[in-house]
Each structure stands twice: as structure tokens, then as C-alpha cells.
Amino acid sequence: MRRMPTSSARSRVIRIAVALVVGLAAAAVSTYLPMYMVERGGGATIGTIHRGVHGWWHARDRVFGLRWSNLMLIDPPLSTPLWDGEVSGWEEPPPPPYPAAQFLRIGTLAAGWPLPALRMRWTVTSMTRSFPVPAELDDADTSIVYAAESALTGTRGGGPEQVEVLWIGAVVNVVFYAAVVVGPVGLLRRALRGDFGRPAHSAGSSGSSTITSR
Image (cartoon, rainbow, N blue to C red; front, side):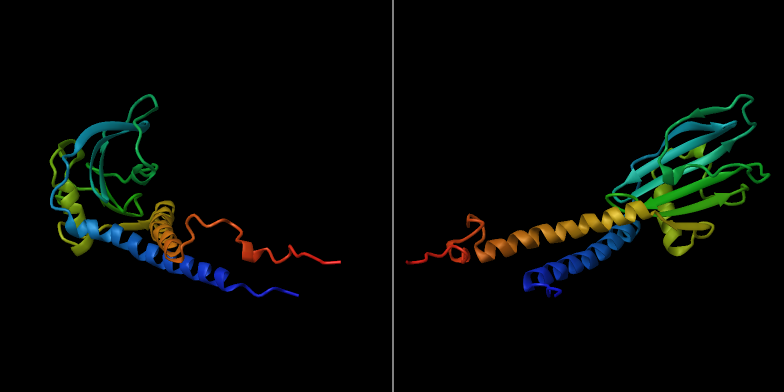
């Protein structure tokens, strides 16, 4: 006969469910709130990366909860393929072929903490749009602010053309915040019940040990 779940098991399931809901809400806040709060970046650094015969100028900046990556294709292509420069998966340039354009610029903003959970990407093929700026010139602390502003309001040439959930980061963030809730709540409940220092099996629970008189 199937045993009904005990009240302890039910309360544990309820706590986990509540923690996951709280974790989901906290993960969403940690993704969007940094875009509202950012006032300036840390100052972008510029380098180059190579993927096959294609080289890219690469500028990157970061503040709490936000990461900015700006790529600009270097023309002409290399004669010998080269793989150089490490970047995170969310900021990797798309594979070729690339559109015929004088300037191909790809700006990517990743949001979320502790891991990026949302990726927003702008792709520009002309100089008529000022955002993102050419990566080789993106050494200030403003691009990450402009990216957050554009993502929220669609200013500076419009919102991102691509918005993608980074599922690994999103799941890790939810679990992280859920654990932050479950752990302290569980310890508090044990403290209120006085479980700390109590033996695992109290004397009153050993009902199987009986004395039989003859």
C-alpha cells in the first residue's frame, strides 16, 4: 500500500517550491535592475581576436550585473587562418558569411548576476548609426550605459535586434538565490525547534526496545 507523505516531507516540498519562486523573482531582478542602475562603466579595454581568416577589434567593459562586448570586423581577411583571443560564449562573433558592408559592428550586452542570464545584441553595417561605436575607439566608460539605455528604451538607434535567454546562467542564478533562501530558513526553523545539539534519536523514539518480563 502506498504510504502518504508525512507532514515533514510536505513542508519540505513547500519550502523548496517557495524558495524556487523567490529564486526566480530574485534572478529576474538581478538581470534587469542593473540596467536601470548603471551610471558609468569601468572603462573599456580594447584588443583583437581572430576566428579563422577573420579578425575583430574587440572592446569589453563590465560593472556589477552587466557585461559589454563590442566587435568590429577587420578588413581585409587574413591569408592564413588563425584562432586567437578568448571570449565568453555569449560574446562570440557569429560564424561567416558576413554581410557585404564597409563596417560590420556587433555590440552585445549580457545581464545577470552571478552569471549572465540574458544576451542583447546589436548588429550595425553602416556608419549612419552611432551606436555601437567602432570597437577600436570604444575605450571610454559610456558604451555599457548606452547599451542598457537602448535595451530599456530603444534609444540611440533602436533596441537590440536579438534578445536571447542564456539558459545555463539563468538556471544557475535561480538555484543560487533559492539556496540563499532555503539554507537560512532551514537553520532558523531548526533553531526555533531547538534541534541543535539534540541527539539524532531521542530516547522516547526508540519504541522498539522493550523489556519483556518472564
